[in-house]
Image (cartoon, rainbow, N blue to C red; front, side, top):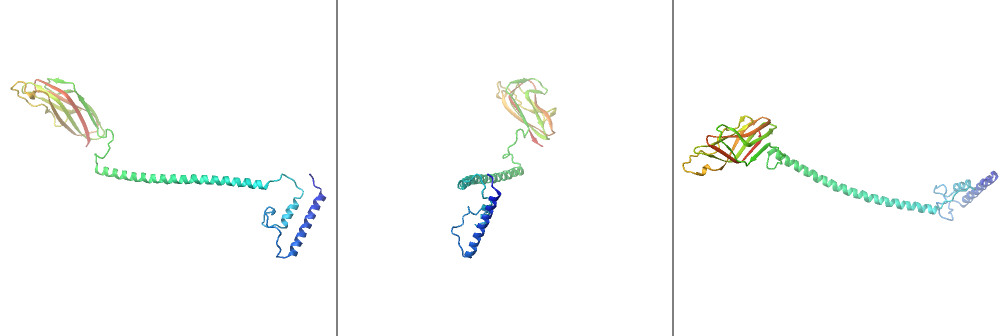
Length: 275
């Protein structure tokens, strides 16, 4: 719809005259004049907090214009609903924040306890390291090198010179200079009057201390079936100090002075201790 220029001029002129009339009435009433109705923000078109001539000018300037009307009440209700929804969201977020703060507090407590445990363990470790306490120290597998072998197969010999005892040999690898403790035990006997068995331990081709030893006693059997001629249990520990790092074969050798020697149920264990 088009508005004629003459019509627009008439509207502007009427607005001006109406404004002048309102102003004259307001002036004629003096400073103690009070409006008939209270302030209505919906009438305050320019939102300056005062309903005056400027609001009328805004209406007059838009006189005759058309458009889609707005349901201000519905608009306010919609805004109110959105505000309520936002408030609910804020409450939910605050609840989550409170839960997170509670979790953080629990984690901080756990961290404090863990730190205290770590300090305690470090203190205990320092004590163990200071005292070199083996009884309270959990050693890693093979932290102390060792090897062992066992045989229950009966063997015999008539050799009068040292030879390798069957199944009595182990291999050990040393990462540092070490003292070797060589432990041997067996059941043994020698038949014949005045005979005995000797053994020795070798580290590669080096004879371990103290050298050859008499394993069985010297028996002079004047009466048949003397008990000492039967099997008995014997043990001996050899020693080899300051063996340098490397791989070594440790073995037991044996011989008899005469007659026949028998060996049974025997073990060989080698342990290396730091030099």
